[in-house]
Image (cartoon, rainbow, N blue to C red; front, side, top):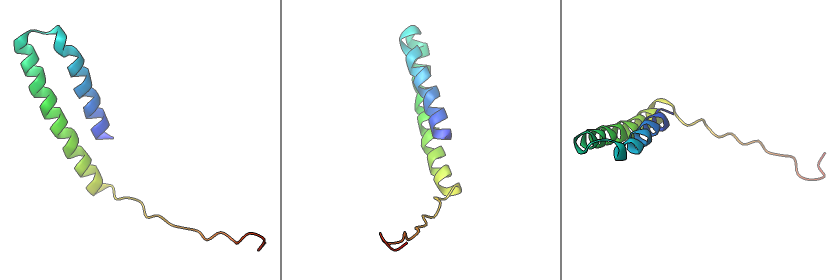
Length: 66
């Protein structure tokens, strides 16, 4: 969830790159790199803090057993 939000900001900043000066474009690139790193860290944290739910299986009755 946090990864997706960070990457949407990353994409929005990317769309701004052609519209800014060279100096500002470099600043945006640095921001985008930092946001991409934060997004990866968010994924790692989410994977550690929100464990996968256990998968439970339920045996279904065999056909004709009812």
